[in-house]
Length: 406
Image (cartoon, rainbow, N blue to C red; front, side):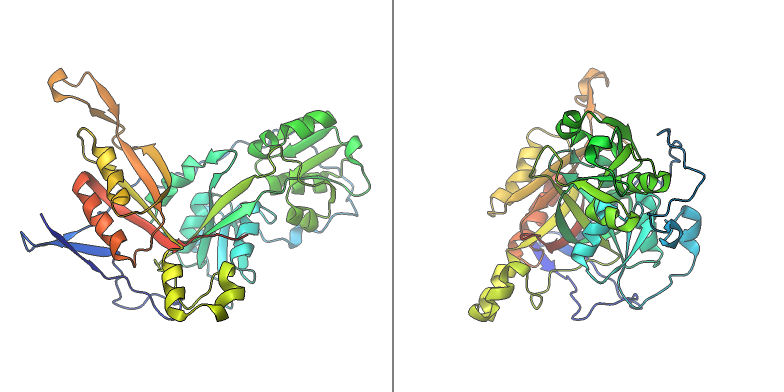
């Protein structure tokens, strides 16, 4: 069956802060020449409902001293994280881009947001789910989400959120991790006996902490650990957090880059309400100093090949179906940069062979794939049209420029 694909991406010349009346943006549509009937290539996927789980109370055993400590900043001046109940308040200041992130000021997610938009206003949220909902309810313009770490691997919970919510990936940020040992002013790292941080940050600094003989205590996140140490004022307690957290909470940096792996990088995604195609009138940092030497036509071609598209799909049952699905990209010389599988929640198991009366079962998976091509390219559109032959559903999560230079 021959397929004709018609790209209908809409790429406005100027960003819109408010939705256009009657405007509908479709990712792409595919029609069959044999039947003549238009068939949607992007099928809606029902995710699970929001699950906002209350986390257990902090068991770090630190008691705030009764006397105020003079050296740390006034923590009441920092913005308070959004909670589920505050999602229905007014949007606030519209003078600049507002980006939501999970955590409190000083979190690595906030640093990633400032890397992507240096002049943005960051909005802390209590949960990742709350950060998504803040964008959907127009309280903020975008959200930033950590998706994988070069040491800790993929963050599976956040992959599930990408499917559950209808936001689109519009940018990625590769942030080098710089874990710092922080303490109250005047102390040395030899005086630190206990250190607080996120469990993953503690695991990434095991060798350094063992050399110092420091006891590890888990905290909600790195910024919360820095805030707790600053509030307690204890000289024998430190935190592992970012440089920004040290500056915000008035702590001394006792040691930098204490992570065991020097090439520790976290990948973040920037999410928006509307999809986009990377614009050819916005130069990448890698070409900024060379623009005068590149012809406009060549620049357009180079930008197209520096784009990345993220999709999620589920396969029909059959032998070699996954091989056939991946082959649609290889046949068109499209490189796959990421593949992740997650069991479907609503239908986790399926019968392998109907003749055995359902005794043999296997997991039914969702596949998340990143491939290095823009949806503006014909080969990418044909690849997704071909992929549709083997999938029960497919959804494009976003098309965005690759973060090549940091």
